[in-house]
Length: 558
Ligand SMILES: Nc1ncnc2c1ncn2[C@@H]1O[C@H](COP(=O)(O)OP(=O)(O)OP(=O)(O)O)[C@@H](O)[C@H]1O
Image (cartoon, rainbow, N blue to C red):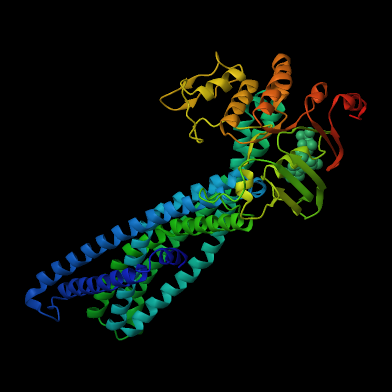
């Protein structure tokens, strides 16, 4: 039923198509039954007996053509659903707030994408369901017509088997759901293995624990649940098939004894019971797929719901520019951000913070580990949304509508920055690009970077420090006035580090950039205009840097 709903929501002709196919096939199957039984008993068919061969061929042709049309329609519909589910998921994901994405975990996205693939079996499943159900209904109706008592007995057996199936199936479904949950954590451990491969190789304990206590246990549990589900499916199939043999036994041995049914009626009954074996085992065979589809749709929708429950950041509409691109000032008024654990207990509070940044300033942010610097950077760049207070960009209060545009005013390089292999920014990557080459020189990467003009990208096979320098080139090519750096210089060698604080920062200032950099390099603190020190989620010192304050900096507690 669930699957039908999914199809109906995508195509309003779905139920009509289903009904049409059902009617056509039921007429065909009923006539086929009649043909077979009349031939066995040596009687002519009731209507136009002289054209029996033509009616037979005509009905078969109509049934084949209508099934073919329905199949094509369902295949197209399923492909549309697959495409929509996958893209919808990604579409929702790209507007999800970063904080909610962190909570969601990438492993759930991977399993959901795999779940979408499960739906590709839907057309086959649907056609089998329709044809089998129609054959069964026609056959039962035919049996009731031949002998009402016998027909009712058959319906009774079928209802009994069905009830037994539904009951067992619910149990199997629970197991499969657990297997899918295990799949989520399996992807998480797999990511740990792949992303932390170096760390895993460096410790036998880590290697053994991750493999033995997590990956292996996960797979073993999944295996035993999967095995149990598969065994139950097989048992179901066995019981389903043999209960029909019992029905056959009843028809042959019991029915003639308890009713007045004669040999003439028993023969058609036997033919019908045998005729039903095919569709019945087809139905039993696809229960696994029906369950998988049901669970997949459930999980995809649950993920979609979780994504929707998070905060959606309205993407920047390229035509609307509310904010003045030339940066003059940024003002935080009593901004607050809080972290909570699973039990909704507050674990960390940043703020309330009052701060004003003016265009062209070079600001350093310092403070102990866990004092809230990165959290502040996430709020500053719009990766996190404030839970209280207000942000004014060029005196324009940032709202939900302008949030994405606000975020787009910053070029940011985070501590664990990711360099994309593809040129998603559509930069003009070629040696003839003077601006690019100027930045390459500024970052002293002339001899190192491999520029691929055809593919329009730069190889990311670089050392960590070089990678950060390439990230800076890209940040400058974004041509934004605000640059945020989170411990950018930490991976640079001492010579380049000095060059960064003494030369690059001055050049950025000359270019009109406002730089906000998290740094622990107290040796270079005098190269900023202003030093913000964070302590327990608050700005404990906001110091303007000039010659007079240099000595003050060295006296500051660290
Ligand atoms: N995603 C998160 N979920 C929950 N708590 C977090 C999260 N990120 C950080 N925290 C908590 O917030 C506090 C501040 O962390 P933050 O990363 O902002 O500190 P920091 O000053 O940047 O530290 P460091 O110098 O070590 O990078 C810490 O107590 C940390 O445990």
